[in-house]
Image (cartoon, rainbow, N blue to C red; front, side, top):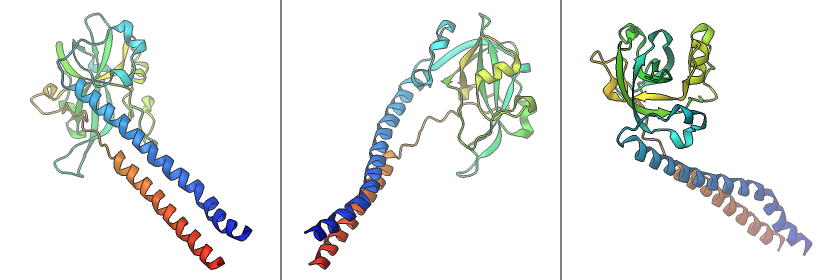
Length: 243
């Protein structure tokens, strides 16, 4: 009797932790799927509506990407070209898998009340940066609000002292350029802001976010089912061997 119990208990103890982890990963992917679908729905609802006014400066300390990103707004102001930052980045090229390497030009825009919002005017390849100066005088910019860019594990940190920027961070830009009253978000200019020269190329905000979490969930659940089948086969085989 004890031998039979061990023949069942040992395989169960061996696979239980892995089975629990696989089920947990599958469940987590389903939760991520629900989160991603909610995010995509918010983007669709905000990004394609009529442009609204910029959030009031008094509300900036409470602004959060989770609730404020991708809102479509329209602002009037004057660019500060001397405070512009060029952030390393990639943009879609002429074919799939062939991105362009260059810079996103982030230029502070002085609003009529004196406050500032950093505008992502668009992407430019290195050789044409001299042709991508911001327009002078008062301009009207329509675009989408974006939060500070966090960057991935392999994204270098900004190095303002050397003029090397890899993450779009309005607070860091304000500190490096000695600016105050700067909005905590970035305004990604729409494609209509692209000048006749074609540079910088605006309107590159990605709205079609990938959502493969259901596929990933099926993968984890499938591995869990396979592990359970193998464990069951091992238990049956051992019981037959033990008689």
